Length: 305
Ligand SMILES: Nc1ncnc2c1ncn2[C@@H]1O[C@H](COP(=O)(O)OP(=O)(O)O)[C@@H](O)[C@H]1O
Ligand SMILES: [Mg+2]
Image 1: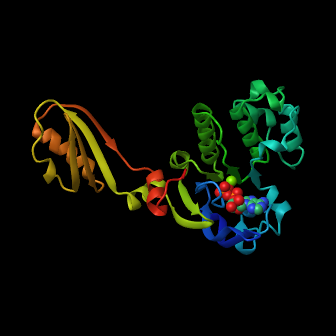
Image 2: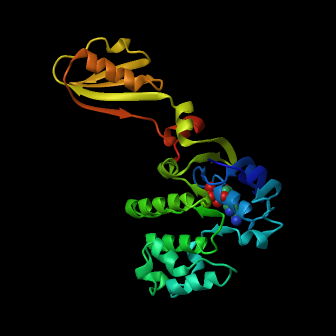
Image 3: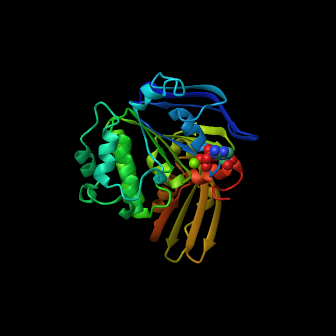
């Protein structure tokens, strides 16, 4: 059950000189969810997050985090939130346990550092210099440091950028683990796959404006209802494909058929049709739209353009 909202942002605005980085952004993050602010580089994600964390002063709008106004109560808030650090902020030769110790000393009731390192798979790196860690290990250390004060809300900015797929997956499961322990996670990413895998809800931001907010599956359902079924049949073509409800096109290449249609039941209808037609299907797969397709549809261009 998702409860009260822990972050409320209303009409946030922030400009750097003549560059409007965030333009009238509004959204809320609810207790116990992983909420993603997603969009291309330069969209205004980091600026928004930093305003919410209280380290940047908004030009306009209202923000509350756990009922506090971040820019007015930074110290009170710092004890209750966890912020992932940027890499540059750790010295090369600081050891993993030293960093954890240092961070622990900043808070009145820190968690057990060794236990945290164990949970994040860094126990054997306790005595290693920061500069000797791999990208994934550094990110896991940053997560450990963000969690040391047992925060109610955790902020993660582009946590897996630059990591290989394996390290990325490991981080993803750590982040869902944070949520499963009852925390609220507010993250940013420009990776649509990451958002789709990880986030309960997302706000899509482009040019500083929030253009959509919902669960990834709901956004796909709403904006990209098209579905495709691709199958390969032995020999004779199945009859009556054009009459399947919701079908929009049929294309054939050799014995491989691609059926495009829309509606939640489209895939089921195709399967029923094929099983009733008594042909031999050698291979069948569905192609469902993704958050990337939603982004394309909403903005008219791809996320990497
Ligand atoms: N400190 C800064 N000074 C001037 N412009 C900035 C600064 N930080 C970000 N910007 C600009 O604000 C816009 C939004 O940047 P940012 O919030 O970092 O976006 P994102 O995190 O989505 O990549 C970009 O046009 C960026 O160039
Ligand atoms: Mg950023």
